Length: 207
Length: 207
Picture 1 (cartoon, chains in turn green, yellow):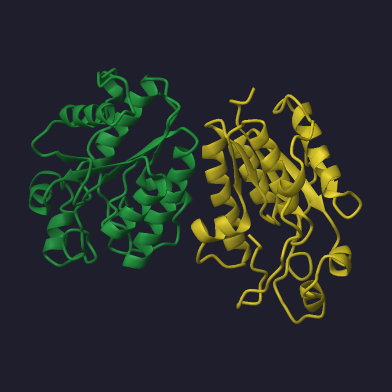
Picture 2 (picture 1 turned 60 degrees about the vertical axis):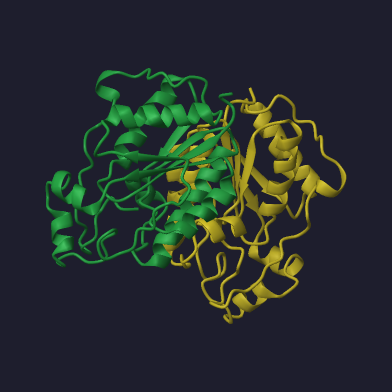
C-alpha cells in the first residue's frame, strides 16, 4: 500500500492551522516509513513562485505550479502534502483533476475567530480596518470547497484531534493501513503559524 | 538498484541533440521498469517557468526551479531526465550540489555545425547575421561544463551511439545494471528538434 502515491491538499485562510496539521501529518507518514514530501509556503515561494504576486492570475499560477509538482511526486508513489491558501475553487479543481489521488481538506476558521484568537501581530485587525489590502478572507476572495474529503474546525478541535480526523480519512480512502498516531513529543508540530507582513503589505507565508 | 534515484542533466546548445537523446534514454529507463520522468523544455516552460524571460537572472531562476523539482523526484527514487540548455556553469553546479546523484552530460556541437546541418529554418544563420539577438552560443553565453560525466559529439555519432555512451556511463556510475539497448523502432526518438522563434525573437524550446 505504501507505494501508492496521493496528495493531501490543505486549503483555508492564513492562520487557520493548515501548516500545523500538515506538519504533524508529514511526521506521521514518515514514521510509517512512507515516501513523503511537504510543499509548504516558504519552500514553494522560494523555489517555484519567486516573482509571483497576489493577483488572481498569479495566485492561480502558483497553485497550478504546486499542482504540477505534486502530480509528478504522486504518480511516482510519494505521499505529497500541500498547504497553500489556494483561495480559488477552479484552480483547486484543476489540480484535483490532474492528480486524481487527491484528498482536499478544508481547514476551516472564520476571519473573526482568527482575528480574535490567532493573530498576535494584529494583521487581520489591520486588514479588517482597511490598513492592509488584498487580504484573503477580508477584501480578497476565499472560495470554500463544496465537496472536500474532510473539513477541520481547528478552533474547536485540538491539533491532535484534527490530525486524527485526517488519518482516519486516509484510512477510509485506502491510502493508509492504520490511523493510529505514532509520533509523540517535540515533532508533533512547531507551533502556531507566525503571520508576517511582506513589504507589499501581504502576508508573507501566503501562497 | 532501481530504487536509487538520480538525475541525468543534458546541457548544450539549441539543436545539439539534447531532447533526442533524452527521449531515447527515457524509453530505455521505462523499458527497465524504472520510475522515470523527463522534464523537457515545453513542459517546464508551461508549468514552471511561464513569465520568465531570457536574461541571465531569469535563465538561472529557470534552472534552479528545474533543479528543485529534479531534486524532489531524485530523492524519492525517480530517474529524472532534464534537458535545458542551462548555459551558465554556476547554476548547473548549484543544482549538482543540491541533488548529489547528478550526471552531467554535455551534448556538444558547435554553432557552425548546427547552422550548417541542423537548422532548417535558418535561426542560427539569422542570429549569426544579427537579426535575432540573445541567442545562446551566438551573442549570448554558453559556458561548457569543465568536468561533465560525459561528452556527446552528436554530429559525429548517431543518436543510437550517443545513447549507448549514456547507458554505459550510467552502468559505470552504478545507476543501471545493464547498458543493453532494449528499445527498438518507433519509440527510439521522435526526430530532430524543431527550432521555432518566439514572438520575442528567442527560440521557443530554449529553457
